[in-house]
Length: 435
Image (cartoon, rainbow, N blue to C red):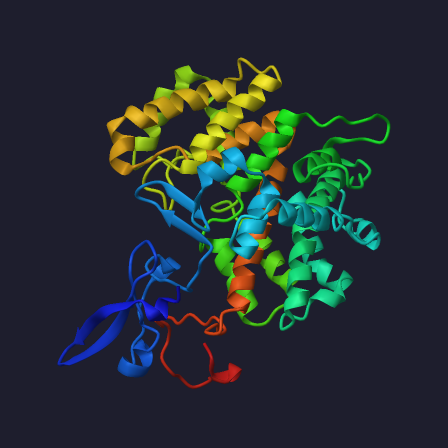
């Protein structure tokens, strides 16, 4: 449904003696929006909305979040159902095409993605240009952007065939590039993908296999990895997704747009939150020390913050956190980790957060980052890889959002405005007259 066909009423804006009407549109679910696209033309004024927290930047059919109720839907399907019953490539198909695939569509999609997982052999030499101690995320940002130099035949955004080829290539090749970034950072040889393995199993093998012995994928860990990918696949108009859309609005090629999304995700306030949560749990150390840190978190004069609690959007329990908690237990049980100090601290912190009036009043519920860091650490990933894994999963969401934007007839280049508070017009002073 086009929002332009769902006009319900008008909003009236009054400034002094003047009034203007602006249309209000309803989505299929969620809050209505006031269309202020003609505001400047009509009034000569802009809105002021730092962080765009009250601004709808686009119309989308991909992901819906109800932060108050703790609901996350991909194309209308609850995240809990997709994570429990589907796999990641099925979720990719859903986000890209809008519907769950039939068995034949799923088989064809899996086949196509699997046979695009190899990267150009020169990419390995490209990676060797990085310092041996380069951060894996730095390598990923550079290598994803470099894809446009290797695959010229899928950078014409006006061609729907090339757009889809580029989309498939990125879903297929970003796991390979991510594994290569990891292997390079630890000084091990690159491992080629294997067509007989599923998406997540293939990725784990590329990360942890070595040439001197056969690597057998643990199905429990592969399923956990797949579920983590599903949970992170898309999350509406967050910072990195908005970055991809803004970059794409200029007509930039899709590889450059996804590289821009990776760069934005690298920020600790966005993709690095699970690493920060893990460091916090390690700092606390034991459940006995939790009261001390909770007290510090409540103290406005203390700089300490509890990481992994609360969310910019969710004002209820993050639905992804419930799935991640279950997955965390499954991984630790499979690996024989019964008494993990970090998990003990996490469980006690969660119990306190769900019963303490301070947390309840401020709606500081555990989020997905709270559990994902523990899970990834148990699986063998260093903290430097956490954001890389996030980027890998989010690639399909970025692509889906980019593709939707490109195909939107109302799309135009992004150009936010500002409230200028600098110096007014003044004349240039020659150097000889400056004091």
